[in-house]
Image (cartoon, rainbow, N blue to C red; front, top):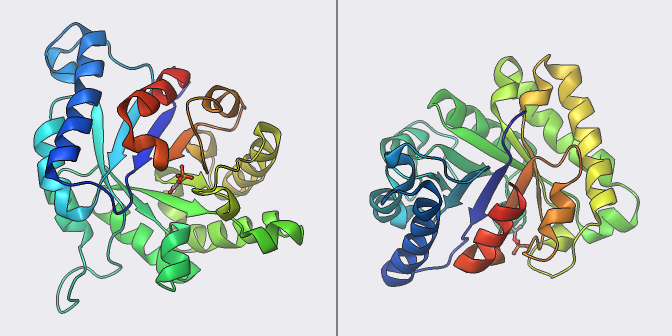
Length: 261
Ligand code: PEP
């Protein structure tokens, strides 16, 4: 059985001092489980699930230095759809790879909403990540209006279809995050049953595209916290969580990691 994956999305938060405190707390919690000073480096057991932090691009080098050799994986929050060149301000997949990223979030609803990212652009970003050996965490999810109109399944299927269309041959290498937009940062959460229903739809869509669909992690995101994580994570198609606000507090993030064990 695959390990669950808990990924923290720090969004545009942090500074060098707060990042160091948060990462040191996470790393030392992992190391104390493994009985070593530095978690994975000691080769002992650590968390029962995979855990990652997706930090702002400017802090990737700092975070890498603090998590290297530990159980904590490093991720980014966005990637360019271009390989290199005259794209001021963009960060390429190869740069992320160079900085030790194993994961990158693509198509977060905040980027779709505030930066006009289309399904096609998200698919192209996922393609660039995969080509660089980085796992894209492809976010899908419906807005409140779409939810109330009963369009949830149509919306998430359309969003995932674009990524399958562009990345068909290696679609089993992606991670999908179902994040209902109305649940992000609002304190409202999809019920475990509601999340499972959408995850099952996404799994069926992946099964139609690849014989390896069961390998794909489908994460739930949207106000996941220490209190609701265990129930959400107990659903058969909920393979982990993409965690925003609660990933900024070490005790909360560690509780969610423990709930995934
Ligand atoms: C997110 O930003 O991906 C997210 C799920 O945020 P929050 O947990 O704060 O709702």
